[in-house]
Image (cartoon, rainbow, N blue to C red; front, side, top):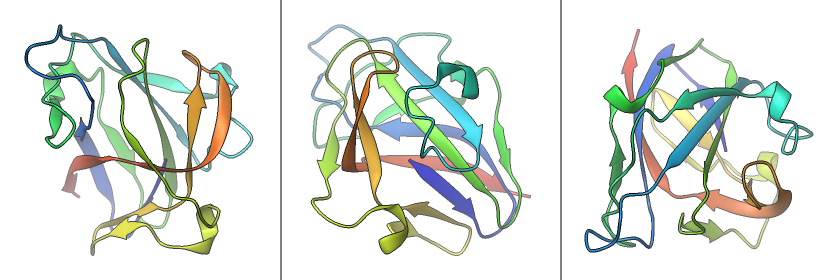
Length: 149
């Protein structure tokens, strides 16, 4: 998924949605990032920088946020005002949840936003770990935690 900074922001952590619950084992999550669009780079691992995770994540179930704490990140991600930053969240488990958008590509709608940043609509899902086949029209399900600089 892509984030466009309306203000300069420093991404510190995220929450994800997973089908795994507290009764399941914690799972290994990996988060990568790159400046600019993900389009054309979905399968190019050399274009991405791994920023997480130092430890496993405890799933909270499909209707709850599963926190990926700041301490799990190798570094924060600074996004300059007006810039686009892409994020790739993956797991060896096939338990991350997303929403099929069934609709327009990335630039055809705005996705979620506030006055600090915009999560651009129309992401992709990747079938296969870690950089498998891209499946279009997927919306990321999660929360971005950040500071405004």
